Image 1: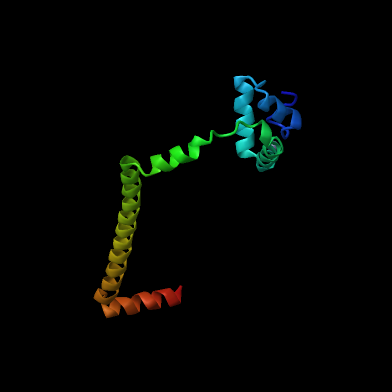
Image 2: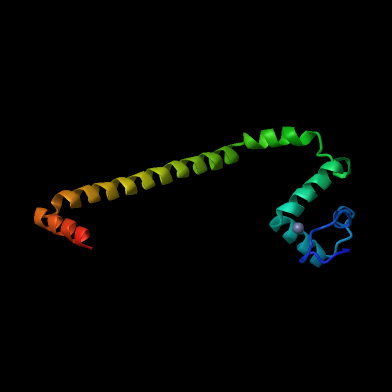
Length: 127
Ligand SMILES: [Zn+2]
């Protein structure tokens, strides 16, 4: 690595070093940490990869077919359904909580002694 990553942005040389696998473990960690936290270098890295797209390994042709088949297998479908269902249950529970809180507020408002209500109103005005 030609530069101290923590202080300044990554350079083309840094991206080349990454591409050619010349980074040590510590440098790789610093590189990834910086690109993850610095939008400027994240964009620059993406732009670098876009320019060097031919250098990136092509995904095998059978991969799309394999992924499509895997997605339709029962265990994946069940897992997906369970996630969707649990989100619906979460929404229902949230709605119930809001509903109960609203009902309690309305009940308290009506259950409140009118004199107490007047007292509170006057107290607020006097303040
Ligand atoms: Zn940066």
